[in-house]
Length: 183
Image (cartoon, rainbow, N blue to C red):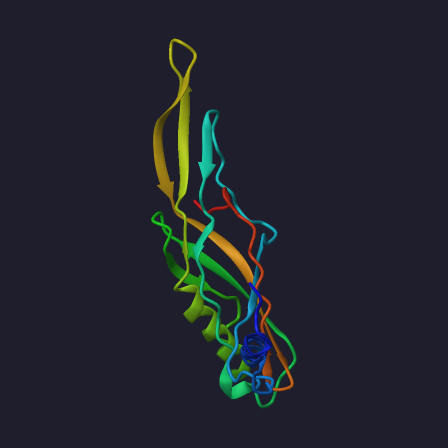
């Protein structure tokens, strides 16, 4: 069955019309932004001491919210700022408190960044830290004897950057920190 040239030209015209689009412009710079974070283990961090037959699991981020770059600082575009925060997490995996060294004594700009960190971090949640005790039965098969959720704390460095009046966003996953904790 032969096609007529009119049908072929009409098909080609429809195909080309579907490819046509208005010229695109780059989106305007964002007036809001987020920050990046990374888990850190400060010197002197206390860890749970596990007994023979105990295994820990969990303590991994389940839900995270990026801090919002303070919009009133974007026009000035200050140099990068890092805020270290200690997230205090309860046995259910919810953040109960966010502690930052010298936040109250910091200048007004740094206090704005610290407030953004606290607002975001209070919305984070983690898989609960569980410590399981295993034992072997008379046949030598291992099984969980008991499991206890425990509170823990994790430290994070939050970094805020601004380029040409727009907040720079680089979000990297923090490594799992199971076993880090406070007693």
